[in-house]
Length: 134
Image (cartoon, rainbow, N blue to C red; front, side):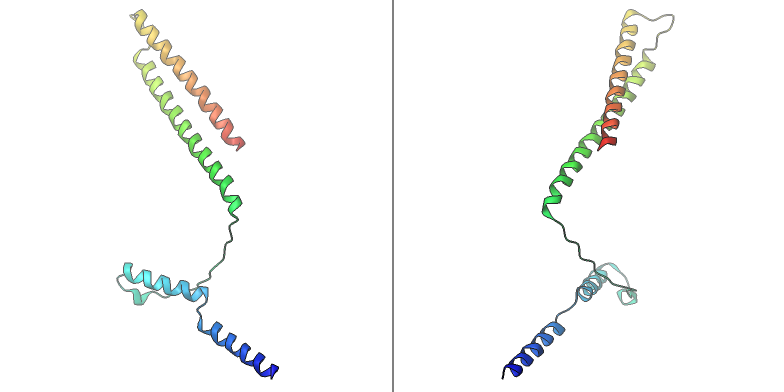
């Protein structure tokens, strides 16, 4: 009696597992359904190979990755901002470049632009140096 129950149980498991679709079959059906919406001739599509990999993500690893990503984003913003400040200061330096007819005001503006450029370059170097450490 035990053998018959065990045999029926095994047969039932085989029937249930054979009726469900594998991950590859599910992926193929999803792709075919999606391609029907985008292709002019979806019947002409024939997949060469479908292989579904599983990826397990440990939730505890996501938080540090997100923090580093945010830090990198902020750092890239600072780098771009420093580059803009350098370009602006160089433009101002070109406008106020001293010549034989320069006034005190124009020499002061040139000195101010030069100082801004040097500060922005220093900040840029710090940001790039910090980025290489990450």
